[in-house]
Image (spheres, rainbow, N blue to C red):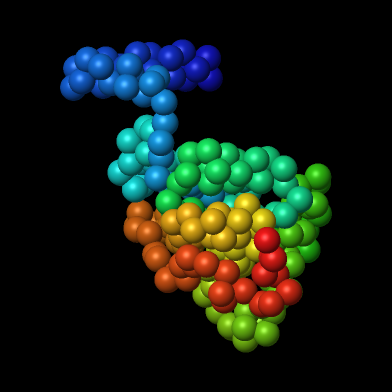
Length: 211
């Protein structure tokens, strides 16, 4: 285990050397500032590295990750990232990316007590409750699991649109799109759920904020 730890440091040196061999000013440019066009809200799962799976370079994606890529209205961590991304970095796109085989989603389908994470999983269970008619009608457990992953992403996209941060940006005429994706661990491909939102017109009236 200690050898693995030291190998990480050696890997970093190799990575730096590789980047400098291509562009001697690579890190000078990165240190000058960031203006990423994308905010990525993804799962903490180690198998879903945001930059790598979309071929993005450092500086191109602002990243927030948590268990099951959740957008929770009381999560100050997520809201702080969202506020900075939208109002300071002025990102053009926010992508909520879930993934098939998500452990958080799978746990939310069961009744097992895990520990403190139960409190986080409850938010995912709420998504199941909102879609229980559709999900319970799916007999195959794997198909139901996959659909739950997709519906969870859809719900998080809607929850992003409900935030005052996003709606204020739209009110000010800021170009900002919210998108829902699902990544396949078994094939590396991203599925666009085609649920993009560019304004709050599709939100129920009660969620539309009057500025």
